[in-house]
Image 1 (cartoon, rainbow, N blue to C red):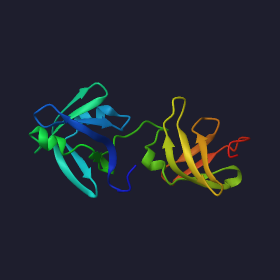
Image 2: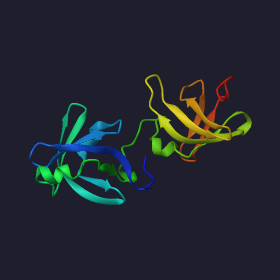
Image 3: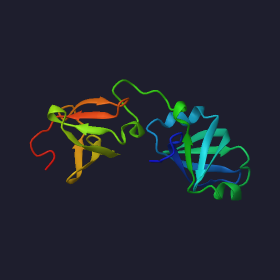
Length: 171
């Protein structure tokens, strides 16, 4: 996750690929197809963020191979290893109903029965069965499963998550 309000992380550069300046990118987006339509991408290295054009895109296994404008040789591509790729918030793909971007949920208030304040969402863990909200409470960290019987309502616009306080959930 990033603290830049206008930088939405979509991938990390693993390494150079081949001799012509391509880079191998590990997608962190659930929507890998989004890479195929990229014309420009934000490139973050350390505290510096710049925008660069995308010359070509192709898939290779679970990774994406990108050719960025101005990166025509292997050495230039190698220098990008570890860089983060992102898009501006207004350029994220629209989601289906009742699905949310993690960055829209981070910081949300979590409330229970009778609007009782429980804590704030600090992270979302991707687990095989279901996602899990990591919630900071007065008593420490609570792991809240994102399931229909626990999550009553998510209001991402107002940053509120309403949960059913099942026995043992917050113990």
